[in-house]
Length: 99
Image (cartoon, rainbow, N blue to C red):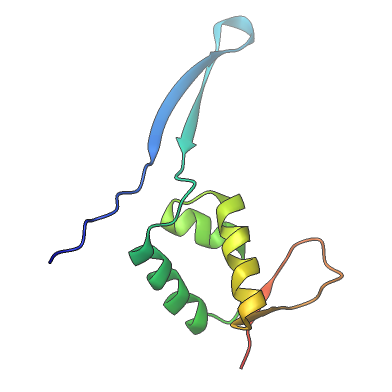
């Protein structure tokens, strides 16, 4: 039996905004997937264990996943004991592999 491939939803659009004096500005909007497919989750777990520091934004940009979803995943890994918070007093959450 073959497993069904889970697809990731990533939509990219470009908007043209009108500015003053006839100028226009282009904005790229990226709508990322709110769920992590199982095969990508395994890949993220392996990549995390090889890194020295882990940031939610780095993982989100690399795998085209929402930052909020990655934060939940990192919190889950912290509860499991795979990673730990580097300094709880910092506003930016930096994780390191626990070993």
